[in-house]
Image 1 (cartoon, rainbow, N blue to C red):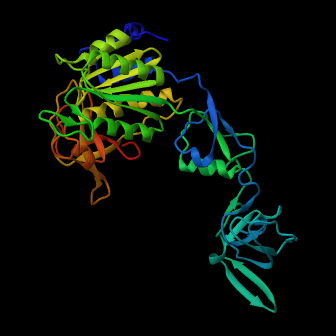
Image 2 (cartoon, rainbow, N blue to C red; image 1 turned 30 degrees about the vertical axis):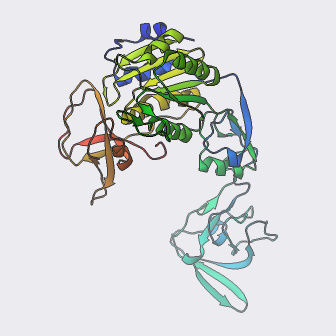
Image 3 (spheres, one colour; image 1 turned 90 degrees about the horizontal axis):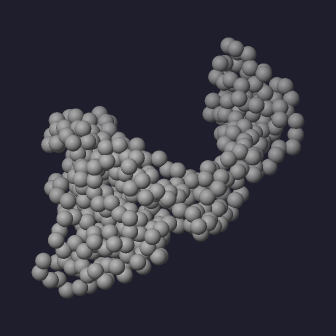
Length: 427
């Protein structure tokens, strides 16, 4: 386990008073590792959505199990096709999905077949019913296939085309999506081995923060951060430990940090990491753990603390509501995914034309709340969602993504393309 000093010594150009976003993520890659200890567990598929696979899933069968028809039509041997010539075949039976057709199809013959029905061994091509001319005469049905319409193998699904028996169907570290659950079910697997849920404790700090249910008082605000952090952690599939609001009291803070470090793999706090005179949170972090305090070249979300208390990884986030969400998305979420054993890659950013000029200073990364939509020509466009203050939580609700203005980037002109980090599935 590397100490803060070990990591910072190896980090090129490390300056805790002026860290770039990329340096923060490089630091966190060194700090956090997949959590081990409690092992993995088998869960039923209905309980597996969003969980992280602990082991590779090896396909016990071929999917599909047999060569079969990809559509309703007529199956035949494509060796009878002649370039430039129509083909007429006699229909000798009907193959339905769910059971093999018992019979023989000779040269000059074909088999009416339904989608998913097994193809007899000597038939390799299916012509869609709507592309044929059907003739009925003297109790015999024939079809005429127009010239140059098909080639061998058309509209056929091969055994094992989706998954081959003995090959990995899913890899360890993958998140189980609805599509992955369907894939596992197609293999006949009722349960799957997953990593245990990551345990994350979180609390807000400050005498000015009120819990819901308290009577309003002058100078105080209701705590929104616990609820946004709760939602972000739930979306990520974590086991959340809500520790409420902790007052600016050294004894209370020490007890809260000690309990969180005992119970959780990671600790998230909001507030108390800036330069305020009454910020006892920083003092307690220093006393109990190995912690770095940063000023990050970003907006919003400049102050942040990162380190360890005991075996728990600590993320001390700023107190402003939007800054909490932005720092979570930019830094905490990727770090927690790594701790969960996930191999998920960062979601690709979209490129969209900016519908208004934006002022931006080079030398810091800015995250502006935006709303992405389709222009008349089908391209993506984005506008900001009004007031960009770090306490304006409504702008996060009105937006569907963050416009990311990178470290070296300057002002944005009307019509310039910008990167957007979309919220869907995250917030």
